Length: 204
Image 1 (cartoon, rainbow, N blue to C red):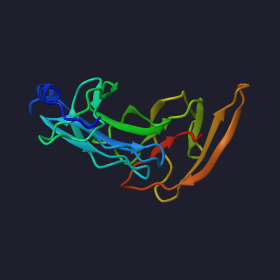
Image 2: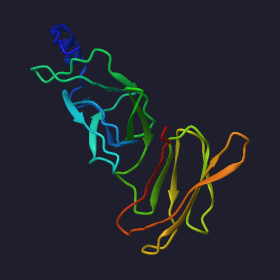
Image 3: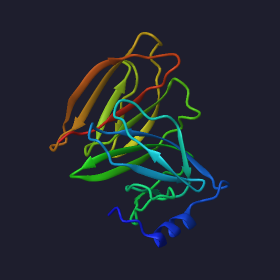
Image 4: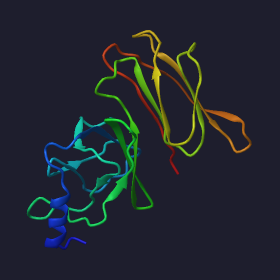
């Protein structure tokens, strides 16, 4: 799999966009602690390495905008071109700013791109992501309305809880019989200079 094939490198080189290509702004975030392999995306004719942490989103990155987004999984050749002939294709939402989620599932690398206007969002512009296989309801703030999110969806939320006082939060999951079970309760801090990113995922 690590064999360098010149013709494939040329094909990749021809497919890389020029510096004039429209870009997608993105950050990465891992759903769990499993280590992902070396990964790359194309940006202005170059291969850009991307990595995933499960503690917080990465710094802002840019890639050539196109749906699907191509993610290459193998090391680069001596010319700095990926040798991966079957990149993972990730469908992108119709936006210029995304959060790219990554995780390992039975030794397979999986990704999900969700709209996230992090370049323009204010501190009260929170984002809630349901990366589970069940519908969820979530309430952020004791007097805030309850949100319902289907599996693999996200929703922008205005956090109205006072800065410095915290937001009482409850998350419930829909069970097989249609009932709802509370799976998480807490009080989350609310900062004047930081927005909240809420990601609910499954283990097992």
